[in-house]
Length: 305
Picture 1 (spheres, helix red, strand yellow):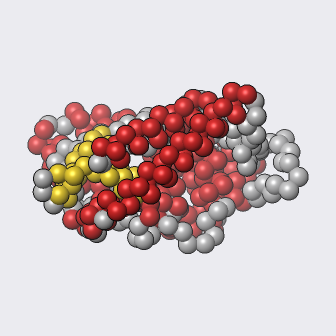
Picture 2 (picture 1 turned 90 degrees about the vertical axis):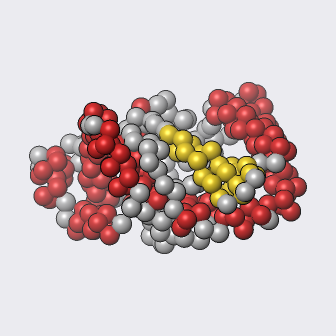
């Protein structure tokens, strides 16, 4: 995290050398970069303040850096998978020494997946106590999911009749997106009825993106087992490869890719105050990489005795 902050501070202090190396000295002109070009000739609606030229230039540097890392991913994965089995095993085992969030992300990036994966006790500390208390909150959780299902069903009806107004920022969800939500909420209700327990790691208090369950476990389900609880977890990202997918809906402002929009509006402009691990600048840096590289996933087991 300190290395990333040093990179960000360097970009803020002066991007001349980075510009010379990455863009051939063309960055100050703005339009020489994808982000700079997107803002050319754009008129923002009244009341919406566009990002400053400096912010756009810093964003261009970060966009180039995350793009380079994402672009190298297929080569890295191909190289590792071509290595002998003992070498792959050694690399996978070595990743277990990293913080759990970094370990999982590294396996996602390299394609090693769950090979020799170890889930440390520190990653699941305190979860058993929460799961043990889950039965007394079952009715409350059921009502929450039912309310979400009812809202999504009404939203879908409004989309079909043309009554749904754009959300703040000009975003309008598609019928397919809402249908996916409805299917998810119905599945959730079925699992709750069968005794499975939802766990939301985003509510944990650890704000360090390298160690927080919010950036490793996210939201997952546990099944009661003979000696505790087990989760058949899938490590993936809903925004994986989002730059190459169909845009989610119309928006105001320049035509940035989703990851460029993330870099400018969340990573650089909305990070003035300390926030949770899931909204940390380092987390957003990782999101930008994931959004630019091919969508991937792998499954692994979490046992809590």
